[in-house]
Structures are given as structure tokens and as C-alpha cells.
Length: 152
Image (tube, rainbow, N blue to C red; front, side):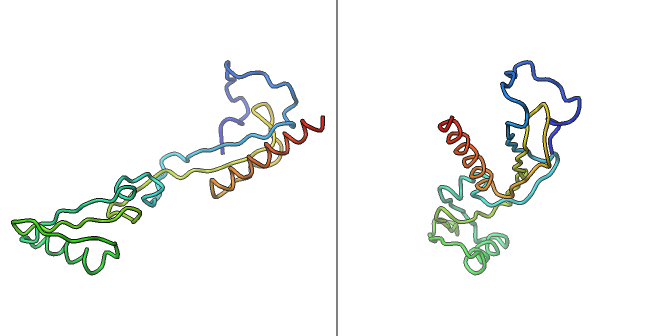
């Protein structure tokens, strides 16, 4: 998962020395595999068209324009309003919150949790498939630490 825990990993000169042994810690990691892209939804990549809606100006005097307009009207499965301008131009106005026509890609993220810290780890790295599960795990761990501190 991470070179952070590899034997002989470089020591970070800016790291504060921990006060407890490695087993007293839990390390949370978010990593992206190198050179890997996956198809992503508009919402995942912060697509402006998805967020704000968009307009497509189509010239229906050409074969390409007629094909594009036909696709939008009959097969796109998007919500839109249609308007005309002069010169055979059609304006399709799409509402926000729906997939645009671009193919988005992003790097996948791996959400890991390992017992221990940079000095030594225990057991295997647990991975969460969803960021929300990783955040929940982190929050539960923080709550457990708070309760332990309050008990003394």
C-alpha cells in the first residue's frame, strides 16, 4: 500500500517524536495508485456542467448537427429545454444535476487503516472501498480515544 511503512523508509526530519509506543497508534492513509485512471461520474470530479447546467448550440444545417440534435432529443435521456436562434441554430439548455456529455476520468483512491505508526505496524492494512466508511472508522476511533482520555 504505502512506502511509508517500508523497511528503511526515509525518516521525516519534521516529524514530532511520538510519546507512546507504535501499538498505541492507528494510521489512516489515502493513496492513489500510480498511472491508473478510472471512469468517473460528473459529481465525483466536480464537473461545472453537472453543477450549473449547460447549453449546447447545435447547427442543424449540417449532417453532424442534425445527428447531434436527434441524439439529444431521442436518446440522450437528459432533461433540457429547446430554443431556436436564427441561421438554423438550436440551443439545448440542460438542467444542473445530470450527467454531461463528457467522459470524465479520475485516479482511484484507496482508503487504508493500519495499526501502528511510521516506526512499526501490526497486522495487515485494512482498506475501505468508500471514503464515507473510512471517515466513519476515523470518527469512531477518535471518539474511543476521547472516552479513554475522559476515563483517565
